[in-house]
Structure formats: C-alpha cells, structure tokens
Amino acid sequence: MSDFRRVGLIVSEATPTEFLFVADGTIPRWEYVLVKSVENLDGEDAEVDVIAQIDRIYSYSMALRENLALDTAEKIIQAGLADSRVIARARVLGFVYNDNVLQPRRAIHPGKDVYLAPEEALRKFYSYGDEGLFVGHLITRASVPVSISVKGFKRHLAILAQTGAGKSYTAGVLLEELLKKGATIVVIDPHADYVFLPRKKDGSKIKRVSVFRTPESIGRYDESQIGKINTYEVKFSDLSVEEIATVCGISEKWVRITNAIQEAINNLQNGYSLDDLIAELESIGEDNQDALRALSYIRKLRKLRVFGSVTTDIEKLLKPQHISVVDLSGLDDRVSDYVTFRILSEIYEVAEGQQFAYPVFVFIEEAHRFVPNKENTLSKRIIKRIAAEGRKFGVFLVLITQRPYRIDPDALSQCNSQIIMRMTNPEDQKAVRKSSERMSESLLNDLPGLNVGEAVIVGEVTRAPVMVKIRQRETEEGGADIDVVKKLREAVREAEEEEKSRDEVLRKEVEKIKDIVEV
Image 1 (tube, one colour):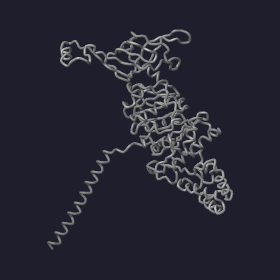
Image 2: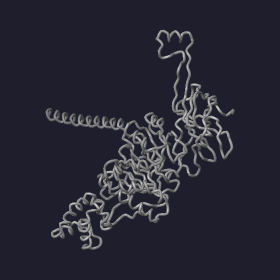
Image 3: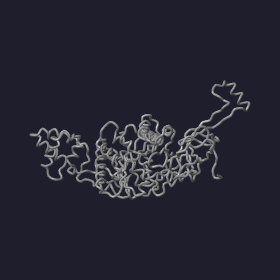
Image 4: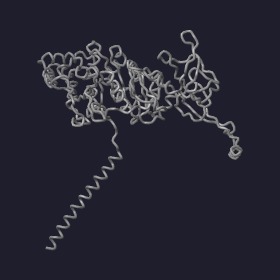
C-alpha cells in the first residue's frame, strides 16, 4: 500500500453506488479516489479496486452550529474550541475485471480507507487499446489520457452544448481520430465549421478530406481560403416521381396529381430539365385540372437551385478512410434540407443494399434544424430512420446541437452515447435528462460548472461516465467566433487613419488657397 496516498475514511451509510468519507481537506471536487472492497468473481470472493469520483464536498463544525449568536461563535473561536471537518460524497464508477468495468454488487463498508486513485489505475480504467479514440484528459488529472470506444458509435452519439462551449471543436477532434482509424465520414455542415479539416495547424495538407458545395452556394469561405471545392448537384431527370412528390410535399394519397406528373414525364425526352417538366404540365393542364394542381407544387422546386446537368455520384462522397464535408453555408434552409435529405437517403440506400463495404459515420451539425421536435422537414424522416435502423447496415449518426430541447426526442433518445458540455438552459437540461439513461442527476447538476472545452461523456462509448478536458485539435477550426475586441481595435485604427488622411487633404487644400491669395 506504499504507493497509495490515504485521503480519508468511509463513514455513515455506504451503498454499492456511493459512499461518504471524512476527507483530509486537500482533496477537491471531481477528483478520483480508490477503495478496496470484496466482490464475488467467478464464484469466489476476491479483493477489487473500486474507482469512484467525488461529486460533492463540504465542511462543517460541531462547535460552530447555525443557531449560535455571533459573540458566542467568536468566543469559541478565540478559545480554540472550533473544529472543522470535511465530508466528501463519492459516486462509484466501478472496478476493472478482465478488461471490463463492472459495477459492485456489495456495499463498501464504513471504516474502509479511501485513497487517491493512482494514475496507472485511471489510465487502465479509461483506455481502450486499438479501438480507442483519444479525446482528451481527465479534468482533475491532466496527465491521464481519456479515450472512448469506436465500437460505441454503433449506438449513435450526440454532442450537446450551449453556444460557445466547444461542441464543434470537439466534433473536429472526433473526426481527426476516426479518420486515423480508417473511417468513412460525411459531415453535414450548415455554417462551414469543418471546411478547414483538410488543413493542419502547421500548414500541411490532409489528402483524405474533400469539401463539397452546390453550384448556387455563396459559402462562408472561398476557394482561395479552403482549397479545392467539389461540386454537388442533382440532374433533375434522375429524380423519380416518388422523389419529386416527396420534395414537393405531395401526399401519397394524392394519386391523381402524382399520375399527372408521371404523364408529363412520359411525354418528355430523356435528360429533361425542371423547366421542361413545368412547360409540359402547363401544356397538358389545359385539359387536365390535376396537372394544374401539380404545377403549384412543381414550380416551388425552382427555389432549390441544386439541379444541374449531372448528378454527383454518392461514391464520390463515400470512400474508405475519407471525410466528405458538405458545406451548406449561405444556402436557404429549404435548400440545405433538400441536399441533406438527398445525401442521407442515398447513403442509407447504398448501405442497405450492401453496395459499400465499410461503415459510414454521418455527422450532422445544427441537427435541430434537420430533425426538429415539432416541425417536419424533408430530412427528418431519413434521419429518424437511420437513428432507428442504420446500425444494422453500418450507418452511424453523430447529432450535434446547442438546442437539445428542439430536437425530435425519438431521434435524440436513439443516441445511446452523449458528449455533453456546458449547459445552463433548463429546457436543454430537461431534454438531456429525458434522452439519456446514463445521465445521473448529480452529473446533470455539474454541467453549468464546466469550463469551455470540458465535457461529461456517458453511454456506450465509455466504460463509465467521465469528465474530460478535450484535447487540442490538429486541424484548423472553421467555426470559431470572431475576436470582437480585436476587430473593434482594428476599426478604431482604420477610423483614425481615415481621419488623419482627411486632415492631410484639408491641410493641402488650405496651403493651395494661401499660395493663390499671396500671388
């Protein structure tokens, strides 16, 4: 026991899930401790090292009670009779047995010594070998790396945080790690948060990352900043009647309207455009009221502005050990929704038909826009389908949002793992509580106390809930907020320079006038 530092003694009641201990006064909240206990393993009793984390710590005095008068309390202190005791409550995380973390079945006995958890024990507790994705370090132990299990992604993952807490940065770390493991990844990126993934901070390039953008997208960054940008477009004649009806919002019950669209398509040559279909519907609409009704829906497609001369093959986005970032910045919400619907539908179809041999990880930033709680979107149905059935075909979701309460609860509850960062909104906290079976009340109460870049990780991706400081990214970040103070300083300098320039012009004009008067 010489390597163990004793920090307290278990007192009062103890259960298999938590215990109280009298602490030495130096141990902080969220620190990790170790206690020796006995568990029945394979039919025999054996001593195990139980790891726990302090989730509450407080001090009290038997002499200085709350009902004392001020002068009485001062006399007790002056007489040296004031005592002080520190009590800590620890939440049991489990013990390692045969490379698995098991939960104790027996209560830990009062009177047991409590030790500071050794670094090696914590490393073993939060490591995964070859399947591990290195995401950061323990908040209280910067020397202890934390990994999560790539196998846990099979049950989908959500990254939840309020604005500015670091959710997109964290997603970038996961993308870097998954790429190293050989993953095929598609990123739905509404604000160009991930378009700089092809570039490392040292200026070197990553070859296995591509950025896609629709022809009509103005984008947040141009090609000179990002590098090569690939075009994503859809040839209108490649859409089936069913797809056209879905995109237009034509109900399956409106068979006559759908038949009118099919009739118009049958009259057209291969390779027809949206305008060709509209013209044909106008033509047959003279004698067909259903065609005129169809026109009111079909004309809305002109607003999408994603239809080109060819359809971008989904194979260009799905490649082994490759990230495809779909930059939707600058697009109307309806266009973004359609592009997301189209891409995710094709991914699911390819995976279901076993036309792609490897698992596909789909990251959806601003997920509440695509799979909202109350409204309906084109992409909502396919996202929910992937959430419910995608793992059977190797399609795994990562939903990223700063508004958990605005996401469809069914989709969010399918994410059995969650990376949760600073969150103070009660509605968001309530949504997290409902969606996660692993999120205890004490962990939920810790969320407002997290700093930027700190997170609680729960679920299938980790053996036990862990509080982690996310590591530094290797790639550049595209979604960082502007430095307001720096920009304001630049504005002041520019204004002062303009003022000096105007004063100089005025001075020269005055000098000219003086010269003329003197002459």
